[in-house]
Amino acid sequence: MLDTLAAPANHELEIKHSRFIAHAAPISNAGDALAFVDAVSVADATHNCWAYRHGNEYRSSDDGEPSGTAGRPILAAIDGQGYDRVVVVVTRWYGGIKLGAGGLVRAYGGTAAECLRLAQRSPLIPMVERILHCGFEDMGIAHTLLDSAGAEKLDEQFLPEGLRLHVRLPTDRLDALAIRLRDATRDRLRLSEPDCND
Image (cartoon, rainbow, N blue to C red):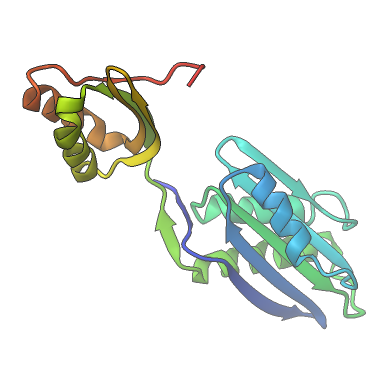
């Protein structure tokens, strides 16, 4: 199972007089990643190289370093440390000694990996969304069972015939919740998948 970061983290290394600082943060989408890159990039630094992964979506930037020597090693550090939904920016101040392509790969990848290794992890739990329609007479039991399953209420609508709830819960609790809802209400309460209009 993959992890994300519990909180933003940073780590600094000096390699042959060049200063490298990694800043890492959890993200919930690509927009978060790019906003973080903008927020922590240092205008007077030599390079602000970065990478992020959010599921199957990922990007990286060498920010002027030779192609493949910075962004990809940072992304490899994210993947190698077992992270998802994470962005890492490694800022470099050039110290006067060239590191060469291999040295840059090790410096950027190593700074990112060490930052992530020392950071506080938070397990990513696979989640699923469902819709629950219930009559007014079943609202109490529905809320109780949803709470006990760790369901998060995303939307709630009162309709003439009752309540429509849009919830998100851990995937591994879905089957047990469905059975408990059915059994507690003589099959009146059922979970359905949200359609594209929801």
